[in-house]
Length: 190
Image (cartoon, rainbow, N blue to C red):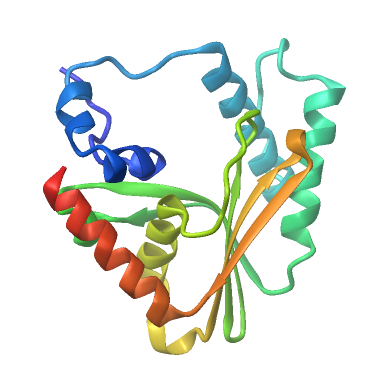
């Protein structure tokens, strides 16, 4: 039996569009691909560079090319002034109706502004606008670490260094809450 979350934030776009995909994927093993391994290595390197914690990544991924691309993400995160959290686990159970969590790659809180930043190392374009994965991470972080009243502006960012793409959705807590309510309803159907 599969142990990964059926309603994972990273697949939210899929299950919101096709709720039946949850039942179809229920008994499939977690995907173990070369692309997933490469993404895992890039995230480990990014975390190490941002926190100073040592990491070991497989030699086939520890290349000057990967280090250069990951540095683009690291520089973006470092360019944002404020308190920084890296690879922070957020509880998504209230929004997804089951025991579920997600891990936000980076969160920066600066006064009235909250940034949720996600590194996408793959080669498929991902847009931050109305991105359910980022919206869930923002809602989970706000619920646990802050409250909606202390933040006036949310900036949900996707950094895709290999595509030279930084996408950002600027929104408000009220708009985010409305979108998360839609996600919650879709999760109940799925």
